[in-house]
Image 1 (cartoon, one colour):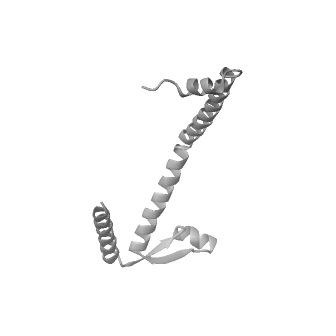
Image 2 (cartoon, helix red, strand yellow):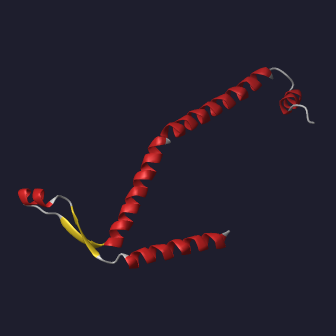
Image 3 (tube, one colour):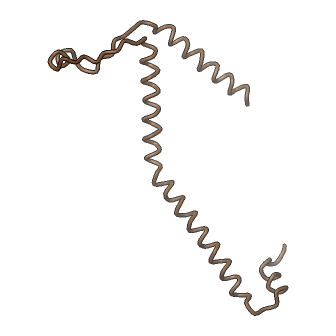
Length: 119
């Protein structure tokens, strides 16, 4: 299984290196259109290699997707939390009812009844 995992990550690395080498040209990213930047007097531009822009876009998409999925699953996590609390309360109640049932009886007989029949 480790070999398959290493092979997978090696293929991913080779693909990323290939994309990086094929897209080495510089691109200028502008935060505003030129007309608006001239009007405001501020032109926040940055020049980066194209592969950096591609990788940052993929990383941003992954982060947004992970966050969206985390928000979508919050109702399921809340339901699991409520069910686990309910299980704990029911176990506590079963223990309490079991001790109430055996009050005033012989301890050995109470232990045998609690263990139940063995099959």
